[in-house]
Structure formats: C-alpha cells, structure tokens
Image 1 (cartoon, rainbow, N blue to C red):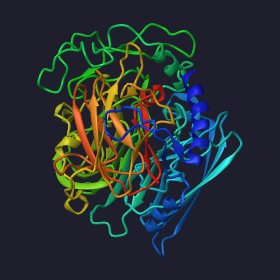
Image 2 (image 1 turned 135 degrees about the vertical axis):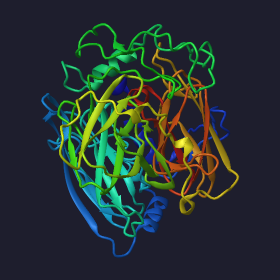
Image 3 (image 1 turned 135 degrees about the horizontal axis):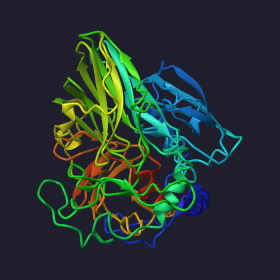
Image 4 (image 1 turned 30 degrees about the vertical axis):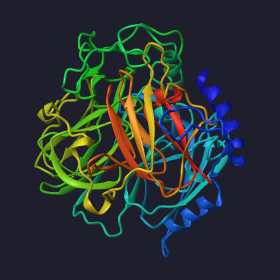
Amino acid sequence: MRTTTRRAVLGAGLASAAGGLLTACSGSGSGAQSTKPVAYVAPDGKEVAAAEARRHRAGGSVREVRLTAARTTLDLGGREVTSWAYGDALPGREVRLTAGDTLALTLANHLPEATSLHWHGLALRNDMDGVPGVTQRPVRPGGSFTYRFAVDRPGTYWFHPHSGTQQDRGLYAPLIVEDPKEPLAYDKEWVVVLDDWVDGVDGSTPDAVLAELAKGMSGGHGGMNHDGSGGGSHDGSGGMGGMHHMAAVEPAADSQGGGPSRMLMGATSPVLGGDAGDVAYPYYLVNGRTPDAPQTFTAKPGDRIRIRIVNAGGDTAFRVALGGHRMTVTHTDGFPVERVETESLLLGMGERYDVLVTAGDGVFPLTALAEGKKRTALALLRTGGGAAPAADVRPAELDRTPLTAGRLKAAEPVRLKDRRPDRTLTFELTGSMERYDWALNGRRYTPSERYPVAAGERVRLAFVNRSAMWHPMHLHGHTFALPGGGPRKDTAVVLPGQRLEADFDADNPGLWMLHCHNVYHAESGMMTLLGYRK
C-alpha cells in the first residue's frame, strides 16, 4: 500500500537527514535534479537552536499538557462511530496559551500504529514540527514524545498528525495563542472547527478511501491530462468550461472492502474553478456534531463575538455564513488583515479565519456548505427564545459570493516589506483523478529530494496548477505573503489552470514540508521539502 511504502522511505530519510548531505533539486525553479551534494541544516542543528532562542521571551510561562491518542467511540449527534481521537472528544480538547509562553505537550500513543503531531501554522523549532522521518522519529504504539517549543505569534492554529491519513480520523484539535496586548474588543469567543467525516461509518476508513482513490478512474472527474492539456477552456469566471455537464453529486458504485465506495462523482464549483473534491463523505460536522444535533453557542443580544473558524477537513472546502448577520474579517491564518465585511467566507482545508459579529436577538444558523458537494454542516447561535432552524436550513447569506484570501490585504504592521526575491522556486501542481498521480513538478514525494534555500533570502514560491483540481498548498514553519500587499498565510488555494506567487523570508532554519492539504493528494505524492543550506 502506498502509505506503508511512504513510511518506509520516510524512515530512511530521517537517517539521511542526520548526515546532512543529500542530493537535492536545483533552486532554479526548473525542477531539474542537481547531482551536486548539498549540506543541509539538520532539524536539531545549532542553527535551529539559535532560532528557538530568538523566539524565547523572558518571563513567559510553561504550559504543560498531556494528550493521549487512542481508539474510542465518538458520538457525532445520534450517530456513534469508532475512530481514533485525542481522549474521547471531537475535536480534541483545545490547547490555549499566550504568545511568549512555552508549550510542553506530551503525546502518549495508544493507537495500533505510529503517529505524530504537526502544529499547523506555527513558526516553531524544526525538530518539533512533527513530520516522522524528516524532523522526528515516529511515536510508536505504546510510546510517548514530548513536544516543547516557544510560541511567539498570537493567532488561530490547530494540530493534527502528519502520519498517513490519520488526520481524516478524529485526531485534530484547535490551538489558540492569545495576544497579551489584544487589540480587538469583544465579549465572547467561539471556536468553530469544520470537518468532513467518513471514519467508522458503514465500515469505511480513510485508509480504505485512499486505497480506492489510488486505483484511479476514467472519465467523470474533469478532462485535464497529467500535463494540464485536454481540459475545458476557461469561461472567464474562474470556472473551467466543459465541466458543468457532469452528473449530480453522488458516490460511485460499491467498492470492494472497506465499506461502500466513497469516490465522488460530479461535484463542481465555479468558485473552486471546476472539480470540487474526490470524496463523498457521509457527514459534515461543526465541532464534531451533525446538523441533526448541532452545537449551540449562547450569548446575549448585542454581544460582540469573535469567531475563530478552522477547516480541519480532509477533502472539502467550506462556504460559511451566519444567518442574519454580516461578518467582519479580522485575521486569516493567524495574521491580522485590513478589516472587510462579508456575508460568507470560503475556507480550503487547513485555512483559518477570525471574524467579528454583533449578535442579533433570536436563534441563528451558522451553516458550513460543503462547497460543490451540496451538503451542509450546522451549529447554532442562540441569544433569545424561539425554535431552532431545521437541520437543512440554508441562510440567504450562503448565496452571496464568498470572500476568499485574494480579496484581503495584510494589516500594515504585518505586511511583508517590498523586496526583490533572491530565489524563485516553481512548483507545477500535476496529476489527475484518472490516474490519481498527484505530484509536484511531475514527481511524487521522496524525502531525499529537497529544494534548497539560504537563511536571510526572500524566497518566491510560484505555484502553477496544471491539473483540473484546486489545491490548498501549505508551507510548514513559515508564513508567506500573497501578491500586492496581500495577507500573510501558511495555506493558500491554487485554482485549476492558475498561477499563484507567494513570498516568504527564510528566517526559520531546518527541513520544512510543502504540500497540498488535501489529505489524499498529499499521501498520493503531492509533497516536497524545502531545506536550508548549511
């Protein structure tokens, strides 16, 4: 199975990383292999320790947490499933600390296989980043590992494994870093975690879903070939012409073993440029609950509420709206933006948005539409009396064009200063649903292949999407800036047929993953590594 093979390769990669000399990709952006050995900073090297010392603040507290990953039964709201989770809660228990603190979290692994913890969005020391075979050895069944690192940036983050398809089980939780000089004024805070759910439903598991997808398919999921040719023409609205004739959204015929088929047919979205996703999930959740038994958040009329929204899904973009309200966007991926009002937001997997709302009087649906999949997740805001809306409520705000990151500008204090890039790395996003051969620059992930960068450089990432699918691209250990004074992000959606450039400053040494945050695309090979030269 691909996942097993990948783990075996990752184990060899960690041993190689310790040596520091590996064959690497050239930094020209052409993707051509270099035959000249390159010495890389090791994940536990002195350069990493020095960067961590710069993050440490005198007087900060140490936040000690114990976390157990185990097989458990979860109640999704009238539907019980057996899955893997942190404790017996979905999402896992929130971890909250203040910028300047040190987190010391001990993970105990009671799962039947190895696991890890990745701290999504944090700029942290490389040997705590949680990528088995690259930055740490896997945490074996019955074992434990303590993650200890300084946290210097406030924001909305989350954590999950970086081991196989485990993130698409119940192994995720929010991580909130408070600002000791919080500039926002609000009365209450609501953390909202969105998810698509398949594990334990009628015998399904994420591993079985990956195995089914890996067999590929012919027709029905877009027309682009591996190199991007043969697809429909652009219609000028961000959609892909020729894709809207596809059948209604439905799973394919039954798969062989691992539950019913979960391969999705006919899910399209003009907002996502065409094909919306690969997996037909039976449930979509807000804070671990189905729409039939939603979570209710209580407040008073007139309360100013900060809502921190996290998309922890495996294969689903969510369009989010709060019925009867407008939302003021204040942050994305932990960084402040120039404030913008909107009625709906679009979040790709791994993205986060913070919004402010002034609560009305009554009961209001917070609805998350699984974009292109025609299903919704639901939570409720209650500030007064009245009957709750039905599970299938569709507030009018969902019909408005959703705000996406390209419409935002970074707040002035965090705006990346103008500077010519010292290095441009070009990544063609390749692959197709037909062969399920997702890759970067036509090559599937191998840990021995790294793209070199040097400390102090301004690095430009140029994503060129040659596939018929959208991809939320995530960079570990850094944030990048979208063009034209755009927001600071660690995860950005790249639409089919489009090019997106993003700049970051190489100020956090180590070996860092760059990958699509669609779990199934990443596990199929759409990942690579950036390595700091010694």
